[in-house]
Length: 170
Image: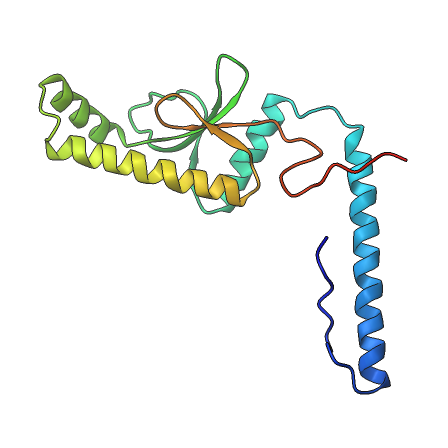
């Protein structure tokens, strides 16, 4: 449990003591409201993959990222953040370089020229964006696990997340 940040750690008069009492009352009210919301959430079913997909897309857009439509993933003009539901009904977040860089890197790999500038740029962009997306998703309190290669699989949220302790039942 977090501690209260009193406006006056060492009150010197009645006004400062009253401000501290108000801060304690506000803190207690917020704790009670949070407990009530957690109790209400416990009875809810898990999010459907479609709802989780939309929530993740909205959160990434809120972070300032352009999120491409989920289909088709191979469109010639596509590149950037993609969020989709895989064959196992899991929400996946990934980064796709623009088709020009993708084609150039693939051509060089097929020609066994993996040290070519296009391949280096492709791998650098994918690795950097994989790290950035992981940081953003973690900051938005999503539990993720890596997908084979690049990308992040979003775990279903639970009523007891990393910052929520399991509370004993009365």
